[in-house]
Image (cartoon, one colour):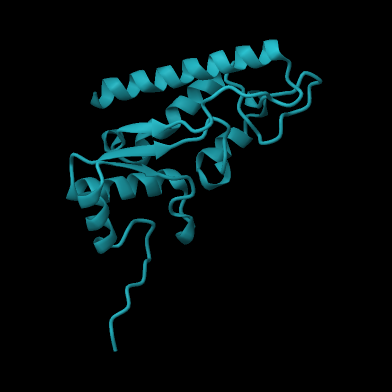
Length: 172
């Protein structure tokens, strides 16, 4: 009988990793990486980045991180976000915007968002070359006035610029 490869870790099989490392110059590792083995996204992304960079040190590995906290339940960071409802964006009437979504105009929330992909507890931050900050654009937020939305989006842009500066300082 033919041998069967069973994937028991969040990383790629050796064959898959070799293909990716030899065919691509940039790879974005997506939210919920590692969920197939009940692993949180951050350590799974770092583990996969290490696996790929061992094969191709020039490969650029991008950490997917949604500005609107899409699929936050797959991330270890979800525990911190849930512990800080004061960081959650509120509608003008005081109720929370569904999500939760962080309020980038709260400095502690913005600083936390910037810190997650760079957290050394997951591995060497130099394994990650940048962040795909999904949801970075401007759009209406139900229940939030235009003036508050503009403040929110300005703060979001500032957080993304801060993250970009940190990655530039880390790995150019």
